[in-house]
Image (cartoon, rainbow, N blue to C red; front, side):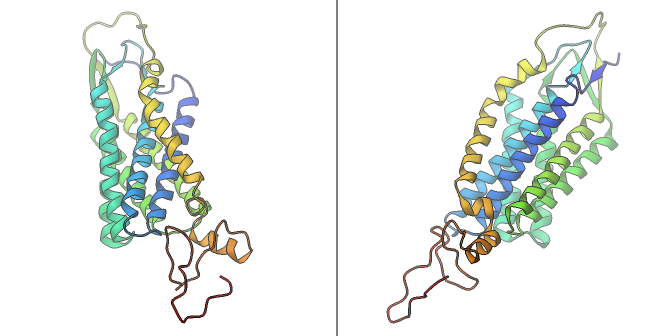
Length: 288
């Protein structure tokens, strides 16, 4: 017997909050990826790892916020904690592989295609592994064509996001990219959910009662949400992360830069944001 599936039991609340979570993770991850392109190589792995964890946590949180609104009226839903957290690890690791490829090879050509494909497959893998962790008195069945469409959406979205991260532009550019990325990730999720049918086992009787999906999932999301807050704090306290290299140059010209910004071709220490002392016998510059 087919179960009565409702993916919006809280109305528009869960889709909107899920979208915002995807945008938050995307914004933080893209800024970290952009920042990695502006620092010394010794600091790059740290920024790329932070970006990977932010994007992975964001899309995972988005998925399970959206799942809070998913119910099957004839059967209670439970979640396998091991598979649920395994889906988070898959998201972070596969997104990380794609981001590291672009971070070290650049957001062009083969590196962008490879990194975007791996990242997109990571998003899709997170979704379907998370769905595999759902426990109910029935079997989940998927429409192959719709599942394929959801994977294509994930790959295209990931590739576009990594391309945007490699542009090394200002905050508004990354904000727009994160909004598009959030829309694409949410679109991938709900496309995948549209492919789902629930075949129940045995007689169903009256609709069941019990713990709501929100009560089951909310405790699991405390850790990833806390991490996103921490990543947000790191971003907010790094002017180069927030403004971007081009915006900092413009601010420097107007006398508003948070710290001196070197001009094109200047030799500088990217970790300190300052020009090193002049070489012996050279003439010290008077201004930036």
